[in-house]
Image 1 (cartoon, rainbow, N blue to C red):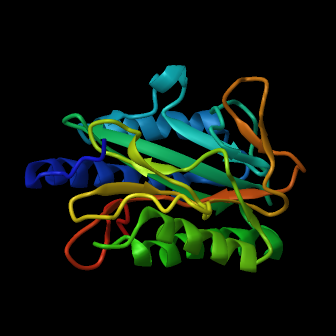
Image 2 (cartoon, rainbow, N blue to C red):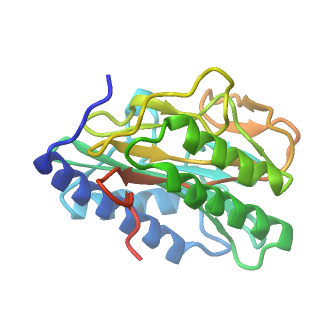
Length: 250
């Protein structure tokens, strides 16, 4: 069931989203060759708790970390570990913070030191697909309008989008209705978008083919062809006018 948030609920979500966005900024500032995902995860959890929130992801479905940290050909759900990051890697952070029972959710992909032009283009196009997609996160459009635009931007750049994983509604639950695919599916236009909806819109874009698989840890999703992947997400509030990205804190 899709929920329309009250003014009080939206204020709680604003705070959860502020902390989520600030956590991503912190992680981006710490990223350098030699650091490990486990170091970054510990710093993120400490910061989230210092802000009066709890990490939404820790323990969610049994996930062991506070942040999903995915490297290079890992698309999503990377478990923080002791691997040492090196120059040229790209790293996707997916973060959630919970405040008074309400969640924020956002993701970014960063480069470690100097990265290739191809990797930077993938990151840029993934971000652009989000901002083009949310032009349709307005009263009266349908979920499929967002999906189709994300797909268009990614595929016109020569990339592919995942089919198995998608964006979602968000609020008291980390994952609520509606599902928000990153591609248009004929015959599935989705519900109409209304003010008060909160949507976690998250393009997941592969440099190569769209096929993926889940690794041996039963969490991390990899590209089938071993090529790079990027992830960009914000929690978006639908208003009577332009959509608001609650997790953007720049």
